[in-house]
Length: 235
Ligand SMILES: Nc1ncnc2c1ncn2[C@@H]1O[C@H](COP(=O)(O)OP(=O)(O)OP(=O)(O)O)[C@@H](O)[C@H]1O
Image (cartoon, rainbow, N blue to C red; front, side, top):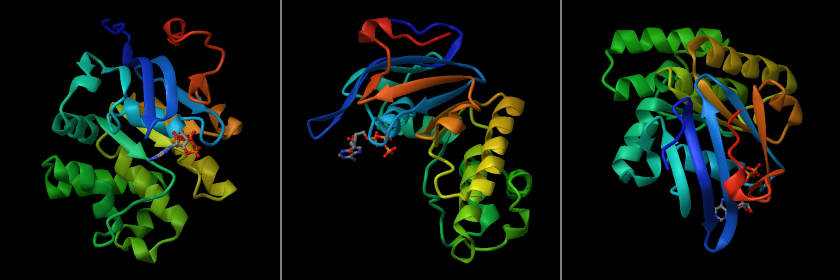
């Protein structure tokens, strides 16, 4: 089945199990260009697994994932890796930075890997670091930074190449309350001003209020969806 034209990301009947233990049991959804979709649910409900399948990091055992007209579930591992690098951004709940590189080099990595010139990549990285209030850390190495600063740098890295889709998996988890609001605001503002579609996994209902729409997962199933065939969630 072909995905609807107006969905940038579309999935149907996703199933995924780890060593026989089911984590996703028939999730279908559509996400529109520029939309901010919150994926909520208790710990262990399947949010990370869903984001993994949507972003091509994981292959579903069954079901389809389409990014625009690209069937992600049929791509080779190399093509999926390229798609993730060039068109998607990912920020998780733990900032994983390259310890040997400075903060700005970490933030600029997607551009440098894609062959963007050093000066242009640095300028773009610096802009995102400033927006996230960590411009002053640009020349420090990760080990010299607070966890909250590291997380902002990881977010800058996820946004620097202005991806089509940003996958954010509990992005505020390592932050204090005051930092959370600012990072979330930057994330949603960036999404809206740059037309970046955001898929945001969170177990915090307050975070989900910033989204345009919420999909709640309960034990690997979309809440309120009676059968997987009936749960296309496009508005
Ligand atoms: N690598 C893995 N190996 C085995 N089981 C896994 C693995 N990753 C996740 N699971 C299991 O799959 C189920 C869904 O996990 P998942 O991480 O997708 O949920 P989640 O909603 O993102 O949870 P959390 O909020 O704790 O991150 C859970 O039962 C979890 O224990």
